[in-house]
Length: 170
Image (cartoon, rainbow, N blue to C red):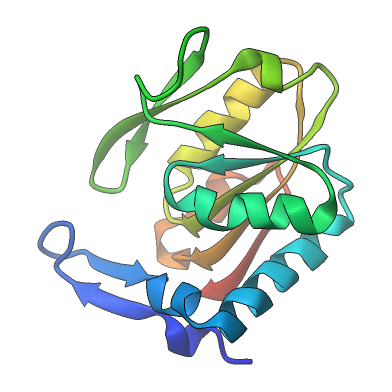
């Protein structure tokens, strides 16, 4: 099944010069949605994760579905102020700005195997920041998976310490 054909490019969004890769058409089609979840879960299964950690907000789309497919838990990494205290936080650079994510520290038990999911691997800053939080809490990042990888932004190199998988590459 050609998943890439379901990705829509939105020129000059969210700012001029950026060609945003929109995965919502892929998610709107029940066949490509199911295929995407199954392919990501199939790759992730080898790592036997205890938890899937999904980055807000688009990492939530499939992170919980992957966790369900694997029979493990799901932990959301949210924007500041979206989770009740106590949280730990990491700030990171985006390809066109800066952001931060928080998570509940008690949801990442020491020694837990955590697989991180987000929709797009761009510069790698989001996942690098989340991985740092997981490791700070004593968890083990066992892999990182994405729907889309923007290879020209070098995110895979930035995440060289981890096993990385993407279904679609640009």
